[in-house]
Length: 466
Image (tube, rainbow, N blue to C red; front, side, top):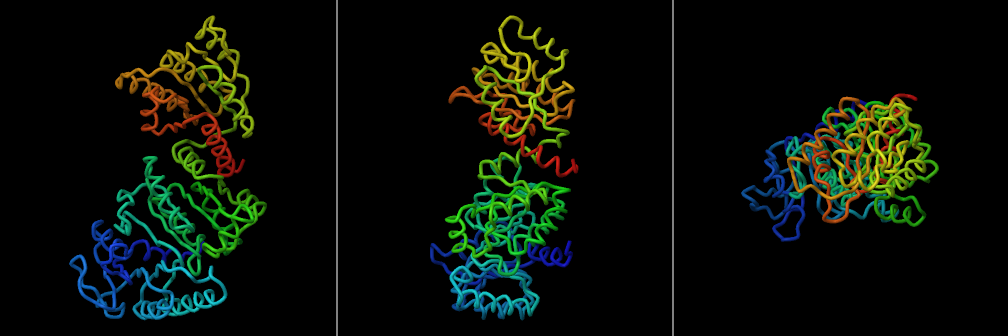
């Protein structure tokens, strides 16, 4: 690991002061809104900058960076690209640690833009200043009250977020918040003209607050370093990446968007297999995988017990597992005998998948509960997938009690378990809400639950070296 980059980024994620260059009181001015957001979040020292001077939100507006009397750790530039070199020079002379270059029209716009971008980086680096972007929103750190957009969460969680796209950065932050896990830190890094996706990956890899790293990646500027950094991080914490630019059309769009170097799919697959990066194909799968890797213990193998009610779910869940490389082994004779006693003469399957039939769905608290206890203790089983429907109880106390029974049984064994409530609208199973609150991943349908378990197997194999 390159520890110099850790020290440099520490000053950017924990700045003592922020200057916003290009603020105005126009209703659609981003700088005005970001200034208000930082002040509302309680950030200690914000300097608005506009050549006209004046006052804004009770803050003195300075005519330039050089006029600011105190130090400036982080400068956010929302100005025309032609004005950027001059401001970058002021930042370098002032000893600013980082520049957030929101402005676009640089490397992604052609040769002239690339030359201007390279000049800006040279100017900044001469003064020890690092540059984020172009076309980026910069860092986010609720622990330091570094929140430039008022819609973003103020409570810190444990998921680090990196994105080449600014809009998708916000989308990921809000999606992580919706899971209840919450983001620890994050950065919209844009075109990687200086500081890169890999730099921020390395920083979040050593950040104690961050337990899982997720990201949206459009290209790689330093493949060898990514291999080295990601391989080391993945041994300690999961990295889940959605990579854009999978098709020729997507690669062209990426080039015009961030100008990062697109990576062919075959190369990307090789990178992931060597580094332990979990590659996903959609934002839905990214968040599903996050739930599994954040909440579940590592698995000892890929053998899954499937408990369903009624039978149609047994078919679809089993198909999904097998397509994803998960094994559904036969249960021991002892487990099958106990399950046969449970279901009696209902004519259901007591091997694997375990089909509890319509009666199991109608009285899920009993039948599903007992089947889960038996299946998860079977020595032939590494993981559990439970999918069932049925009428709600409309009894919150009963739902909570059912969920607590599940949590107690699963916790006692220590094997990974996921649930799927394939319920009709208006037939939501109340206990599933309480399961989710108790760190048991719950998915809308069994295929998504199976895919999450497959990703858990993939990461567990890398992390344990099996």
